[in-house]
Image (cartoon, rainbow, N blue to C red; front, side, top):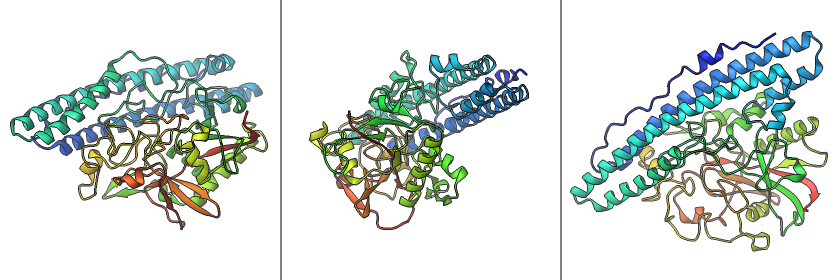
Length: 457
């Protein structure tokens, strides 16, 4: 039984058009940023709706193929269809595509074609929005200069220069890279969630085995989480092969757990001043506590051992405080650079978009809150994981986005700071805060480590 092909005519007809921003009034840089954020939120919703339509079609096509294979008693085709359902959100290697049964391979090719055209449309829409924003900032800079408001004019220029970098990224020829979960924002590199084809600098991982994982070729699990080895030079894990997730645990990772386990629903409903927080699939999950984090790790371990993805003795868990410090680069014995902040030793950062803290975008949404004057990362609350430069081990968001839960002996700690921080003390890589209770907060999430149970090679 052939899968339906009508979806190409349906899913490729949606239009993504950037809404022209109203020119910002003189002196209103936060207002210009807020308007740009609104445009991008609209683009993201359109992109999410389009992907949902495409995913729904593909799920239906897989159902048709599985039913057909079941009726014919074709066990290999049934198993292949189920495996494809679990990995439909990521790119396949040529080897994986070649191993698919013919009908499934043909349907996957149509799906990939639709995804590629959707990304092209999204990128065009985002490029138009960024061009409009750049023009608004240029006009704002001129008006502020004429009024003699030089500090504000310089802030507008700083934002415009960052936007120019994003525009250069959007309009540059793009090499094929592995799909990555990022969402664009003002003055930051764009991402696939709203149309850029660029993403974190990792190569296609496909079939990389756990024992062969490196910084350049991470191990990818069944949820699409990627893990890289971090040398452990001291503490109880010294000499052991421990892999860290390159991203904070995402909403879509936790959602897979929540679909099969009874969990508290706070992670789905966080907001501040009626602004939603941590809702998008590629943002870090927040409003989870240590019990939630450990439950997720235990569930994922059991699932992947049962599926043959993990060897016995390996397990997912929350990192210890000492392991986190080494992964953050605070131990020179394992190649750490021991800088004060993830971007260097200066505060505030000399450059924009180095990490997600309380910036101009935050100030535009939460004018009563304190913020880092003159700094822009482009996100009012959480950011898509992987939106900022990684550290020397290939880990993203070691600073900012959400606090990361850690085990500290018989206690627990939080590391890394969060999206609403403006204090230089909390931005330091060495900063520790205790996590004494089981409360759930919109600024707290977690990162997973993969303990292989084997010595480092």
